[in-house]
Image: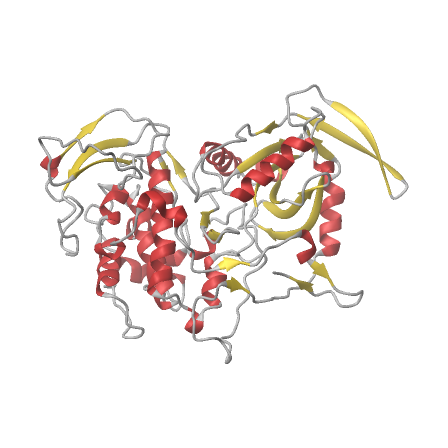
Length: 493
């Protein structure tokens, strides 16, 4: 599976290889169809999948800590030994941020485990191999005794991971997935460990990624409303990650997946930077009427006397910029009768010298080797929005070396076509300031970005209530149909 990372991830998005679809001559005038109707094909992997399943059958796991045990299983007339060890079922059956499809998956796992018998890899039906990454493979699976709910199973060879010095990346991603509880971030249902295999059972997103979805649009680019929709959800996800002390470092359309309800989910956290210390917290009294459209200003608010910092934070407590509730009696603060009280938390002290990421999305401070922190995520947001609008990234050169040189030295230029809104250009310009100290969001984080006029009208507390621009077609295991013998094309949703 082709990778565009400098340090390739072991957990690719749970989707087939991204097709390069030519623009259709009969595409409808509406750039955002209500459903994803395109059908793509790819070469079969049935033989490789069978081989992998034979290997996977050598080791399985339990969902509770138990002593090692063995059981006998007969397959194709031969006897196979299943060796089980310890693993865990993530005990979050009623997280408030779960979309409905996650609730179905939780219920399926709980029913399968209701008699306290160990859940093993043998209890999973491996429907199809979705992709391979640097040190692992991702499979579409379902519980044999479940309700048809699909999962993405990330399977890694522990020995290979150790031999290639990738253990820290696998460990960091697992730790991060166990921390997350957000509507636009992955849900980890269970972890399955054995002496040979490590498996993460996560949510399957049937809508593909935004790179594929963009290829399906007229002229291979999104309209303003779609960019605003997806960008706002990415901002909310990055805000949560930063409040948890996590710098994502790998934002790009390929890592933004589309759930069954049309909302997004960020994936691929093996390149993320995790700070063990609490992020800095600031209490801000902001004037919502203050303009944020000048690229010369470094962040919002510009008057630093308006906020004070504190040394403590409750990382699981998210204070939205817009309240969901409107009380009958308004309580006004004497110090601020024209603005709102907001809480901002950014991991501004976390630093890294690692050279990781995708070439076209690398921030200048990463390329120059000066060390980097949270500001790289806001740079990648600017590149992300630019690509969503124009279908290309702004600093791409003829090769990787020229691309890196352009990132450091070349000024940002916007194509003449298509024409995009002035506020969109201004936001991208402020996000792509080469000096990370002056970059929008570097100090005041997502709050500065959410106040930009490009996002006017967005109710940040109710993002999940908005209608998405595109809703995927429902997918079941039968959607992955292998044709007759001799014709090995596989039909996808």
